[in-house]
Image (cartoon, rainbow, N blue to C red; front, side, top):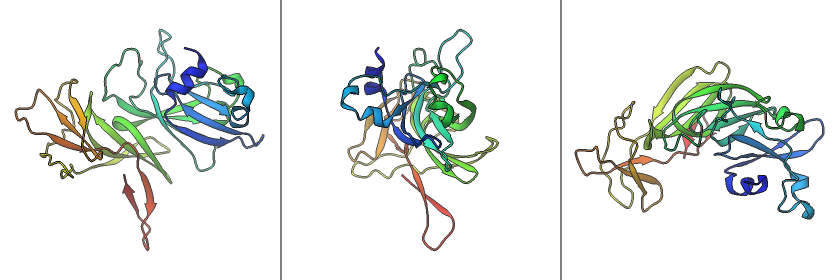
Length: 257
């Protein structure tokens, strides 16, 4: 696939970053199934002569080391830039997986800690030079990410080897990568369509062929599995993105979908 077609088809999330010395503004684009980040020169991208060309792509940064047989690994689905603009935190939805082989949901997520300055340098093209380390997300199907001083807040939208059942928000230390705790979100009350309660296990015993359909109110996901003894439906929170803001008159933080 040509590079420009890949960008058009695969970009899930864009983030603007400013290179400190040159003052250039770059788009940092995740390409999801292509496990590389694409820094794009914004000024070049806006020029008419570069329309439908890869001319504005500065480099491609791998979000994980290649497997020993040379296969590229990673599943970049989200990106957040550090407060000082020097570090990119890239959420690998299913961790360091081969997307041609891992054809399901519920992989263990991680965060690729990447050097922004190296990401936007052409000499580091198609390498993992910008990758500094990986941080385990603490759960499965990770997407949402909030930065707090010293802490990652990570939204994990899936369960073990299945797309359904994710209701965990994990707290991970930014410096050490240590798991600090988690919140298990309550199941939905039904909204416009009643849903029966369903216990979410820490380690899923359900098969990977769980079927899902979107709720009528678009806020939650129903799941039905052939392994369930009852035909009742469970409903799980769809928390792929979240943010934190200070509560009024208090110093603590509240989490919002």
